[in-house]
Image 1 (cartoon, rainbow, N blue to C red):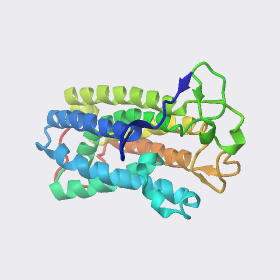
Image 2: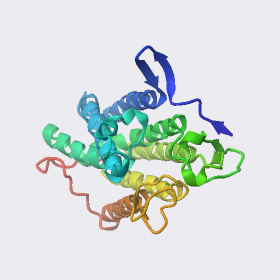
Image 3: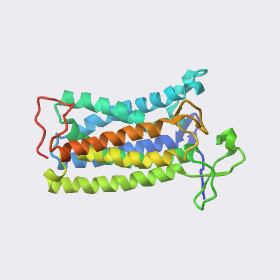
Image 4: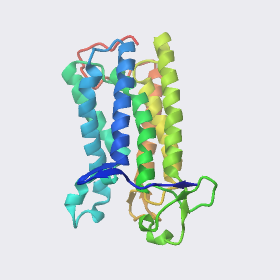
Length: 285
C-alpha cells in the first residue's frame, strides 16, 4: 500500500521546497549528464546539449502547462493567476512534447545541426525524466486511477478525491505504472542506442525517436484508461463518459506517426526529412 507524505518536502519561513519541483530538477540534471554523454558518443558539437537543455526545459514546461490549462480552463477561468502555479501540479506531457519539438527544430536550424540525430540523443533522457517526474503525482496525490483493493493500492486523502469516489480510500497508483513503463522504455532505448553506435546502418537517424513515440504511447493508452482525472473532449472527469480522453487520442496519433516513421526508414529505405537545417547533409549514422 502506498501513502503519500504530502507535496511539501521542507518549509523554512516563506520558502517551501516541494517534492514536485525537486523531482523535476533532479530529472533535468540527470538528463543533462546522460544526454551530454550520448552526444559525445555520437560526435556532436561540444557543449551542444548544455546550450540546448535550459531552453528545452523552459519551453517544455510552459507548453505542458498551457496544454493542461487550455483543457481545464473551467477550473482557472475564475482565478487565472492560479494557472501560473505549475509547482502545484497540472502539466501534460503531450504539451511538453509539442513545445519541446518546436524548440528543438528552431535550435537545430540556428546551430546547423541535424534535428533527428539530436532528438535520438535526447529521447533516452526524456523517458528517464518521465519515470522520475511521475513520482511528483504521488506526492501531490493526483493522477491516480479507479478505486481498487490490490496489494499495491494507493491511499488518497479525502480532500483529493473526486466527489464520485469520495467514499473510496484506495486507488490504482497509475503514476507507478507509468513510471515503471518509462523506466523499461529508457533501458530499451539505451540498449538500442548502443546497438546503433556499433552498427549505424541498423539504426538510422530518427529510428530511436520513432521507437520512443511508439513505446511511450502504447503504455500511455492503457494507463490513461485507468485514470479518473483525464483531460476530456465532450465530457468532464471523473467519468469522461461519452467523451474522448485527450491523452489516448494524442498517444494514438503519436504511435501512428512513429510507426509510419519506421516504415519510411526501413520499408522504403529512405531517411526522414530533417526539419533542421536543410542545407546540412544527414550524418551517416
